[in-house]
Structures are given as C-alpha cells and as structure tokens.
Image (tube, rainbow, N blue to C red):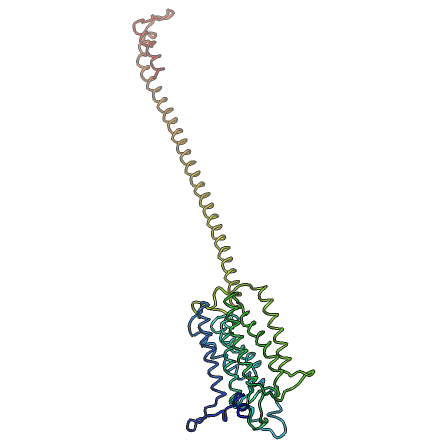
Length: 401
C-alpha cells in the first residue's frame, strides 16, 4: 500500500495563497505566466522577421482582454447549466478566477482584439499571428496547470503511476484519474516545437504558421477531450468540444493549403518604417490605385501642357514667320520705291541735261539766223562753214550726255 500511495501525482490542497487581504490564485498566476511567455517569444520572433521591438506587446494589450472575455463567454454559453440552472447563482459567471475559460472563444475573440491593434499600426494580422503562434501554444501549456490548482478537467479513473489524485470536493469524487491537464500541457509544448521547426524549415508566412498551430492543437485536443469525465454537452455521442476540434481542424488545414497556393512564400515586410504612414491592407490597395490614377492624371496634364507649349511655339513660329515675311516685303517695297525714285531722278536729270543742251545750242544757232536775214531776197544764204562745223560736232556730244 505505501508503494501504491507514491505512484500518483498529488494535487495541491488549495489553489489560493493569501498575502494579507490579497488572495493570490494559482489559476490566475498560470494564465499571467503564459501571457508573458507568449509575448516574450512572440517579440523575439517578430524582430527576427523584421519587425520592431515592442510591437507584439502593444497589440497584445488589445488581444489579451478580448481573449479573456471570449474564453469566459464560450465557457458560460456551453456550460450554462452551471450558472443559470436550478439552484445556481448567475453571478458566479463573472468569477473567472474560479476557473472556466474556453480556448476556442479565447482565440476567436482574441483575434478580433489583435485585428484592431494590427489595423491601428498598419500591420498585417496573419504575419503577427505567425510570430505569436508558438508562444500561444506555450501559454496554453502554462495555463493548463491552473486546472491542476483547481482540481478540475481530469480524465477517467486509472491506476497508472502518473495518475492524478483528486480529493473530495464540490462536483468531484476522490480518486486517481488521468491527468488530462498534463497531457494537454505536454502536447502544447510539442505543438510549439513543431511550429518553430516548420517555420524555420519551410519559411511559413501569411498565417500558415498559425494555421499549423491550430491544426496540430486540434489533433491533440480531440483525443484528450475524449478522455475527460467532467460534465459536457454531447452531440451524436461525442462531446461538444470534440466536434469543435474536428471543425476547426478542417478549417485550419483548408486555410493552410489555399494560402500556400494563393500566396506562397513569406512576407517581405511585416511592419512599416513609420506607423503614421502605414495603411491597412485594403486601404493600402485603394491608396495605390489612387496614386496610380494621380500619376496617370499628371502624365495627361504633362502631355496637355506639352501640347499647348508646342502649339504656342508653333503659333509663335508662324507669327515670327509672318513678321519676317512682312519685314521682307517692306524691305522689298522700299527697294522698289528707291528704284522708282532713282529712275525718276534719272529721268529728271536726263530732262535737265537735255534742256541744258538746248540752251547751249541756242546761241550758236543765232548767227545763222542773222545771216539768213541779211541775205538778199531770192538768193540762198551763204553758209558759214567755220561756224557750222562746231554745231555738228556738239550735237553728238549732247547725245552722249
């Protein structure tokens, strides 16, 4: 018998340690430790992928509160009889420190908070999820030890050496059971190692590391959930969480395959240089289109300006050509006018020269006329050969002038 009493995992006698008036609960400590580990590892992976230090923590400020609310809502909705059944107190639904968080709701609503944080910083959510995926698995491994402090969520009865001892209490029977919290904790550590190895080996991106984490976790959660004996809703003989694990597993695998085909490789840039200049993916695409449209408009405006400048240059050229033609015509007209004036002057000079010749000839012809008057009637006048000769010789000279 003494040997048998040593072959099991003991449970803590209490899950609360009081520090004066302040209760320190083991369940809360396990969750807090898990969150810190997830943020620490996620930050290291984020920096390794080109992100900035502190970004993971900034977005976790949004994701963690949303995750806690989502996890509690899922638990209360799926186990509503524990809080709204006959003889139950609905106020207990707010006592999160007593245990009761559904990982499905925590991941779903936590993703909404992470999306808000990523959108505010202009960061793609899939890249952030890839960096945080193994850290989330380790956080779950830490958080499962909170079930150990509360002596809850154990499996069927067993006498295996690693059986978990459960003491008598509300909604539980004393005995040794399968330590399903330990199985899931170890499984989550294996999932984290798998994601880290696959991410290094295959350079997973665009949310595929996170999808691998989800699919691998669902595989383990399915068979571990099947071993549990705590109260739960059943559908077709299976616990509700088993069906949830099956559905989520299929969705994760489909996403992984489609993402690998549509968006192979890994993101080149996971965080913009200046968060103020960052835009969400949809807004970034629209901004790119607007920028393209503006560039096209500027090019059209440039072409129009170039066309107007060409037209203006052509008009200026035509005007210059017209002015040049006018100037040449004016010069030609001036030349013609000068020629006309020159000809007129030549004519005037010629007339003047003729008159001068006539005047010069007049005195020379006067003696001849006098001789004619002195001649006797009926007789021809006597020619003065000495005087006539000069007159004949002058006429040709006048013509030469």
